[in-house]
Length: 161
Image (cartoon, rainbow, N blue to C red; front, side, top):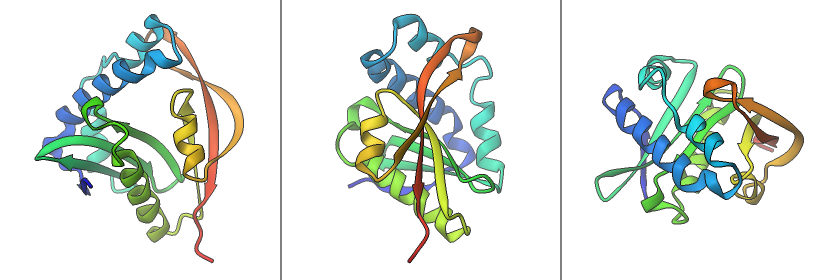
């Protein structure tokens, strides 16, 4: 089982690298090569992750396995939006994503969030459904170069009792 901790500024670049590796490994399951490459593109480098790590209204968590970054996730505490859950291909399907999602839900619940929403890539929809998220609608997500990805808006009530 991975250990989960709050991301630090030193994690920004490794998070970016992990995101790109994950998209390239799993994105082709449901998207065309051009879509995957545009999705994995990083025109702003690790700056957006550094900004999120510093932002108190967001929680960025990393999972470590064998001393390596195994995954990361991000939740926006002011809006209740899970904006990222990515797992490195070497750690996929070993509970890393589940541990990260559970952690993000707990952090959000502790911050007073009653429900979470997200835009799931088509390859991630079954994962979120297994964790109690329900489909709301089909949406598009614009990535680098104006390329659009079909996604599914999903929601889950995380309130206690």
